[in-house]
Image 1 (tube, rainbow, N blue to C red):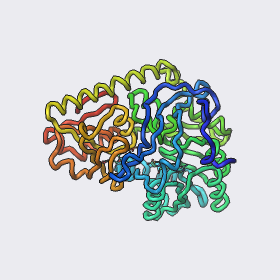
Image 2: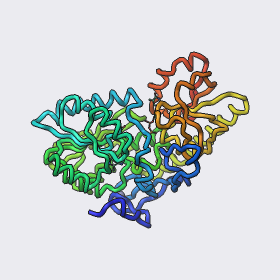
Image 3: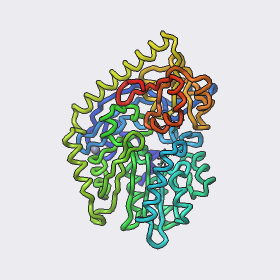
Image 4: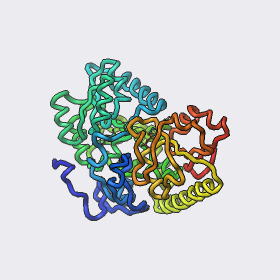
Length: 416
Ligand code: SAH
Ligand code: TYD
Ligand code: ZN
């Protein structure tokens, strides 16, 4: 197995999963790495690439046309922290408890998490005294996990990493990965690692944003550098097959604006749940892989961005104040594609300490602490963290009470 870091991206647009032809359906143009929050000194030195997405005509996997070198995205300065959302905290705690009662209920169980970040999920496993190992290349977030008592390895999960873990700790009963599997372009190396590490009867569980919800809600900002793949039941089933595994369950989740939890096992080891066939049927009925779906999506992206710019421009002309809420990675797509700068949104508030005091990638909008949101409240707040709308609106209920209005752009541009 070659080191994926040294592999060159293919010249033609060949599917990274099956080698089939990838048909491009949207080009966002030159975009900066989404989580590269810069300082006044490093502003302008962001890594840029062409953000465009396509779908494989053979296996239906939606994927980016250009791959950003992984070291440009995941490094010591990577700021994203899972623990910033109380809803996500609860979500992971509940699932960890479920795993502890089922897959991890045997003798001396072992779980590996790919993309363990600050240990939000593994903390529950650690407290239960169950053997675990988090794998994450971003050193700062892995340090936060270790501070919680979680065992974490600062590394990219790939074939070689998995083999080392298998030798040191033995087979894993569960390999879990939330909102990370889609970030890894080199699936051949990852699946060969899973094959080396997973117990014969073990399961690989992947949670990720669901293509059906992204298309259904026109959530185009879910397309950015880190989201190399956008998964559907159809494409994950094909991917599992390509690498010698079987998709045995698919469970819809409400988190992050609509996600899916996929359970994958070695072929014939588990009885597939009827949910898999049901979702496949539904995806086919709604034409989730059809060119028409992507044409409509492309038209909606253009009209949505146009409407948002009109709204922001007219609010500025009327002398209304607008502040952004949530310096999300996905906001880099809409901000840089639509061309939103500090003249329209003078600052964005965000609870992540590592983002505060920095500037957003490309657009250089300052990021400030949520304490500044109410000092004084703006007239409008543009909710870039729309996937956490319920949690944020509840936390900031004083804003609406003071007459403030939220601006949302998913599923369409509206105020609330
Ligand atoms: N699982 C968490 C974090 C998601 S953010 C959650 O759902 O909230 C994605 C994480 O994947 C980042 O912490 C990033 O450093 C990590 N990551 C990226 N490539 C990886 C790889 N090859 N192996 C393991 N982790 C990876
Ligand atoms: P998120 O939507 O989870 O992910 P991504 O960066 O992948 O698009 O990011 C949510 C951001 O919003 C994160 O930077 C933390 C911030 N946030 C707040 O500022 N306050 C909150 O109450 C919540 C839930 C998130
Ligand atoms: Zn393919």
